[in-house]
Length: 76
Image (tube, rainbow, N blue to C red; front, side):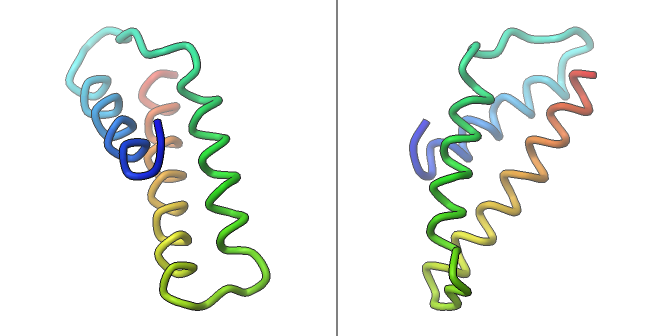
């Protein structure tokens, strides 16, 4: 999972999980990769970075956090 493919993959996993009545198998390293990517995004948004790439990174981080929380809720 890198860059936009991280969000795409998370989207596919979440959609699959929500469509199924039973837990679906997800790659074992999913949460680790999401965490690593979130750390990279946070580094981009640090120090009050308010330029366009910084704002986009913040939005992407927010989207990832919302989707990851939803995935955890559905799986719980």
